[in-house]
Image 1 (cartoon, protein in one colour):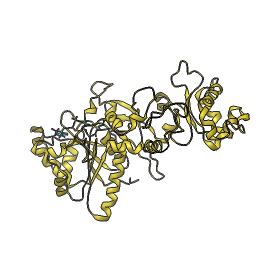
Image 2 (spheres, rainbow, N blue to C red):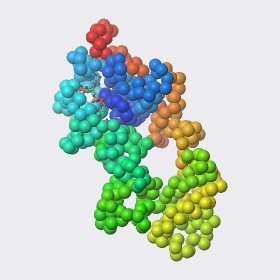
Image 3 (cartoon, protein in one colour):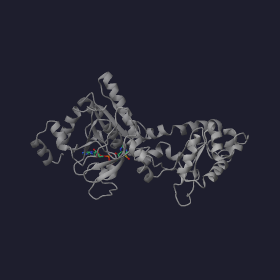
Image 4 (cartoon, rainbow, N blue to C red):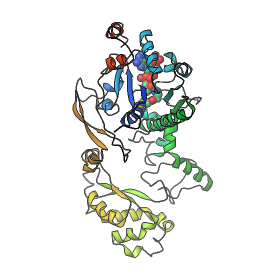
Length: 416
Ligand code: CAO
């Protein structure tokens, strides 16, 4: 079966997580992704947090599957010449170097556009061009702070908190992938390439849009009724941290289940959806709440919502998180067990759907990784191992017309 992106060649000048997550997604869908890495060292994540000596770290293998690796010193004239050839024959160049690094290397947007006017040049930076912080280098947690996630995550009596989800890195990579695919469709119409830029700050903020909603509501009415601070606590003039409160119109909280005293993850998330109030009461055996004016409407419940959650915890006390969800699902209540990474890694449904896959690797044996979360009716993205450093150098160079002697010469000057 041909894959939709087959025939699209991508120069993958990315490192760490934000860029590699983008190009990995495109590789799963069939693009020919050539990762360009510095000879001898390569992407820094190959060495970071190694669990097996001399084998690429999981950080690298889980973000670089389905790619080829070309080692190339693009600061050497000989390396630049190879890169220029590759640029002329590629559709997309993706990079997430620090600000100005590509320009310093001699490959500004103008130069790239001159070499290949059809090429799409896609970049991740911490802040968008022209932003007063656009000279800053940025990692995940920095972006979460700059994009509004940290100030709105955590508990009101604790400090700003970082999410474990890669809102700054992989999320930005996903935004960039959408930008690249859009530019490819645009190129079909115009015949021209273009520059696609995504900043980590913007991508985080895009996911925090309900908090921007809340800022405006707060400024208008002075309180936010779905936050735990309402109605007894104080609101300032900025959106507070709301702990585990639901972000929309339906209150929810993380509730203790049987065993919480010793198991830090014996919890479920329980949502009180307005129209599900009656089934909730039936599930809990509290049918007297159905028509009680103190409970009947969302507005009436809100002032004593934590008391309601306490009662639900009483009901949960003799049920494990899995038993509780098995009962509540029958009443159509939006809920889920708080799952650990160990539980997810061994979840048969996730294995069957290809969301978690086991990939054989030349040096590691096999490793688990996250497969495509996007499912298609006509294609099952297959995950293949990440490349060893320089594994495809010869193959790529020969494809560009270099002879064995040329490759030998390039090796002699340490350009590849
Ligand atoms: N051959 C020769 N030189 C190469 C090369 C190659 N194949 N690949 C990269 N380089 C050089 C670059 O030209 C650059 O050199 P100069 O700084 O001398 O111009 C250098 O290597 C890379 O610089 P960098 O700024 O990208 O790397 P860093 O480790 O100092 O910073 C990071 C890393 C991630 C903070 C920075 O790249 C960044 O801010 N990127 C944009 C935001 C981003 O994507 N962050 C997410 C990272 S995931 O958490």
